[in-house]
Every structure is written in structure tokens, then in C-alpha cells.
Length: 167
Image 1 (cartoon, helix red, strand yellow):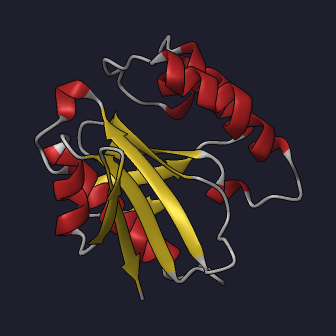
Image 2 (cartoon, rainbow, N blue to C red; image 1 turned 135 degrees about the horizontal axis):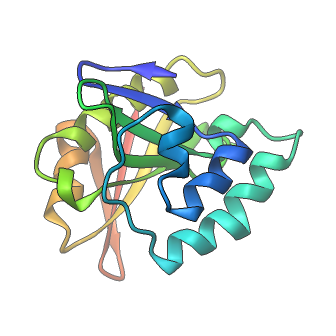
């Protein structure tokens, strides 16, 4: 668990991921939270079922690099967004990050704060030397999150901007 100024960031266990994909507020009930308006895209459901759940279930993997982390507004006691790493560090010590804020909470700086908290955590993890990310070139809010967290644009590929933060 990671604490920031306004957020608590919690990694979801296998059982909590199963509740998350039900999208019926059962996860919020389990965590003692107020419900929020959260929807699941087919792509997210597929990613959780096909990749995240099998990796979290694998005892040879560090689940913290393979699960979904949820961001909880500490005052409102509501989930406001999610973040995940795309696996454990590669040979270069890089981990890839992906994130999203639920629509009703966008524009409030939550994701910038969440990414900042995850950077601080990642810097304490053995073997991690950098975080990489990709954003759609048209998604200004997403790449502003990275810019505010001092990521450097490293290139562009097929309409996707590539970013990196090293230490």
C-alpha cells in the first residue's frame, strides 16, 4: 500500500481482481469503500483475464509488478482510477506503466499524484532503474501526467508517444 497526499494506492490480489472485473461494487464493499461510477472496457476485461490474472496467480512472479493498483481518494473513500505495471523489470531495469482515471474524477490531478506515488515506490524496488510509458499522441491529459512527473519523450511510433523516466 502506498500513501500520497490525497490517495491510498492498493495492489489488488487475485481474489480482489475477480471482484474488480465483476464491476458490481463488490470490490468497493470488500474494501469498505463508497461506490463510484466505474465501467470496464472489453480491452481491460481481456487484459485482466488473459494476462493480469494468470501472472498474479504465478508464484514465480512478483505480483506487485503484474497486478492492477487502485487509487482510493482518502477523504471520499472512493476508487478514482487504476494503474498497472506491464510486468517485472526488463534487462535494462525498465518497467512499463499504464494508467487511467475514471471519467467522473478526471481533471482533478489524481493521476498525476498516483503516478508520482508509484514512481516513489518503484525507486525503492531492487533492479528498477526506469519507468517507460506510451500515450496516444492525441491524449493531452495522459501525456501531461507524464510531463508533470518529469518523464522525457523518447520518440513516436504509429501515433503513440514514447516516454521514459530514469534515475
